[in-house]
Image (tube, rainbow, N blue to C red; front, top):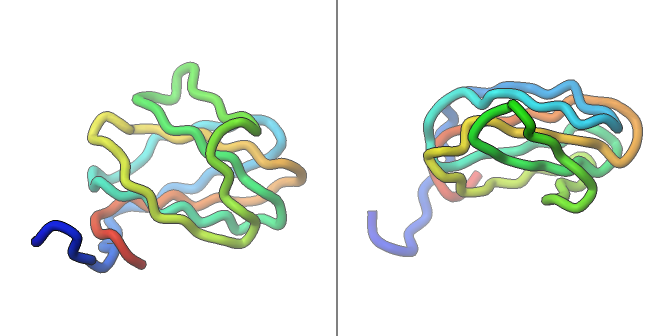
Length: 103
């Protein structure tokens, strides 16, 4: 694919996090270089990525994902886990690994 071209997001695998005001971490499934994060909750979610769930925690100082929205980000091959914390309440955050640059 040419540099700067756009490819549709192709999902590989989805995991969920039962998110709350306490940080929760999960191992990611799939191996693609993109991660689609969907925050189905009514509050802001904060996302942290790492090489494993051990010691991985999210806080309000990491990447925000607005309520009810989704973001597509590029991730490195060593990223194998994610942690999420909500600004308030509880709900589900969906993490879908795959390839592509647009959804």
